[in-house]
Length: 441
Image (cartoon, rainbow, N blue to C red; front, top):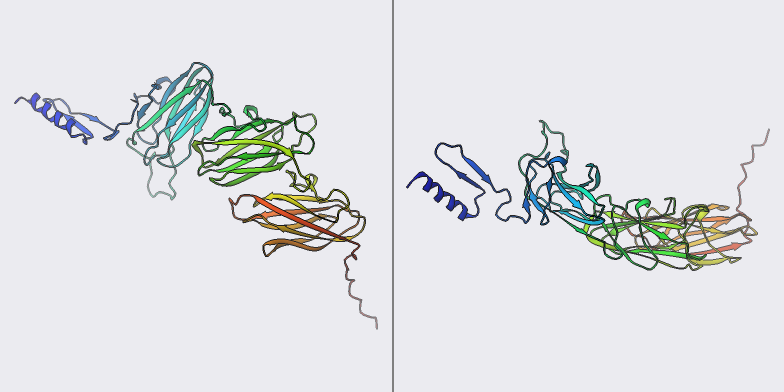
């Protein structure tokens, strides 16, 4: 049998085995040629990358079915070109690589970074679920995040991982329009905010680390006394944060919920500064990111009740009224979480008196009570309640009741009830005189 025939038999046996990653072929005195299947026994779908493709000038056009490739060491970068024929919505996905912390970037025609998807962690997939494209050429960049060693190495660690990574898969699809009520990225500030209207749900993604979704709400149709309730549905494993700002971006209310739980901000009284637009902004973010599940945001309006707080009320000038006339007792309802403060203003009393305050706190939240203005006193937990008793109140002086929440990080805000009672005509507090000086001899 000739040498060529022997080589063909060896090659056929190697192909039939299926688990051989390297196929060697010899032909006389020619140097050996190695064909390496880096994808293993199961080849991911998509066209193989064509090197070199480390910069915009050598970028590989991303096929419709996607591409598969490897990162040849921690410093390797793979660049793919995509073209948008007009206003489009991009959904780009980078499959996870075992043992490698991958990162996906979208860059514009000048190769400037538009967005970065980096949830962190080896083997974690990355995704841009809804990035807005204009007409033109863009680039998707696949690279590795190199982490510094936790302990100082005794020898030079070099440039990081060497050798080929596991095979990754990159896909990208474009849609002409987002779903009805869907967000369009980027929308991370008030200048690029998507619109939300009262009682009409919208959807969005906490798509990548640091992603913030800004929603613009017109409030010119609200009447005096109306308030807003803002509700965001749960995203698996994500601790949502919702912040409300005014037209100039000044924070009104901010709250963070528990991981995997919905979040609702209630009793928000819109505040408009004269001369500024009659809009508010709802900012939604969360950690960690989850680009594979949407949240639903709904903003509703209603007439606020007299016995509920009106947020924001965390400063003296924004304190919610505690009474509406000459009442000497009453109740209020509100919501409080760890690190948050609610303030209530008690209108001046014609004479001196003493004030009692009792709070039934939210689950998992410890409440402390303090007085400011024309009174002073401290009260804290007493069994399952917080209580301040017989705090002296001066005549003709307003009193601010300050509630502060304490608890474990991640404990969601919850409802509480405050009961207060003012007893007037009480004798002023007794102030002890200085001791009598010793008699002179």
